[in-house]
Length: 427
Ligand code: FAD
Image (cartoon, protein in one colour):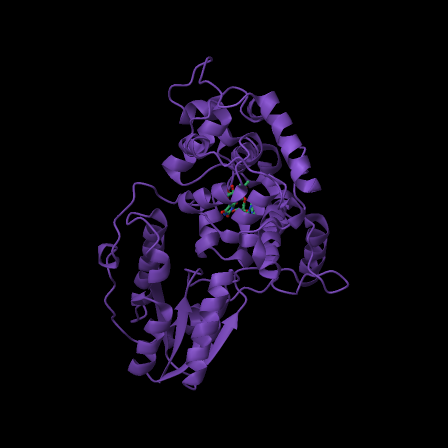
């Protein structure tokens, strides 16, 4: 008789709520990870995120071996894998951490149904966020759709319980099921190594975060995003730490939860405008212009540097993400869903809630979004945030003063954007 802990986007042994709870159960715990074929099928076979997951699992497996245990790694459709596991083992309980993306919610519901129909209980825990679902809502019980009041309520609630408890499972590691499962290579899963790698996170700069975070050449943000995406760091530890170190940095972590709760309460935002009043905008959706944007060949240095950084490294600095996103939606009048999909393909830290939330923010179609008549001027953004062109030169090797022929004239494009939005919204 055994229990299972199902790893998904919480790839750590340290301060992991569901794992901690599983180890408290009466039965030896088999930790399992399932490479989900439905997700893998859509990815190129050298996708760097799969490599990062594999590497993170190898670290977990290594640690488990010190306790005479190992990780069970499967590949397939979760429902089919669970059907096999139910036949193979006498399962007393299955534990996991909640995932709030619409497709993950569906997946978990179907697995839960399967387990229940076999007399097995599943237990799901909050681990990915400090506050979930209806924990931060307005007085009338409705979700917040504006960031600042959400943040204030979040901070108030956090302060009333700070520091949030952390869950040290090390004393219970002897409760893992003793095993020596084969750990598959990346090739056995059908993938190969990518030249693109996730950087280690870096918290050295945090004291000056307020002053430096907007300057892409300074390289002074945390690089935490892929780690938060795949759960190789614990959000509780991070928030407890950030709350003591830097309020602006903490507020970025609250943005993360804000967009997560927006997607949770309004799942339509995954592909539809939050503000349906914007549904009438007539996008130009020019395929050739989109291609030039993707390749970093618009002739606007800040936009091109950002897109090339993304293509080469799977990362782009936040300030530059805002510039390229605004440029696509406003200057080129291409609908945000195209840009969102391109980012989803390329970003190592791709996460539906943050990506959709920020894209809709840039397009002006989202909750608490930038007003539609605010059109970033990419050259002014460059003067403000990369005055000496250090970032630009890093990504555009051929850069010189006469760089490129702009794909559109800024003034014309700005006027066209405002007019098109205005006409679309009024419809
Ligand atoms: P830091 O500045 O060190 O921030 C620390 C953490 O705070 C980040 O790791 C992230 O978890 C959170 N955070 C910071 N800014 C935001 C924000 N605006 N929204 C939500 N969370 C935030 N972030 C993603 O994690 N995944 C995405 O798919 C994603 N897509 C984006 C698309 C666009 C168009 C824009 C403008 C932003 C997007 N972001 C996304 C948010 C932000 O750009 C990244 O989180 C950040 O650049 C990651 O670098 P960092 O960890 O060094 O950030």
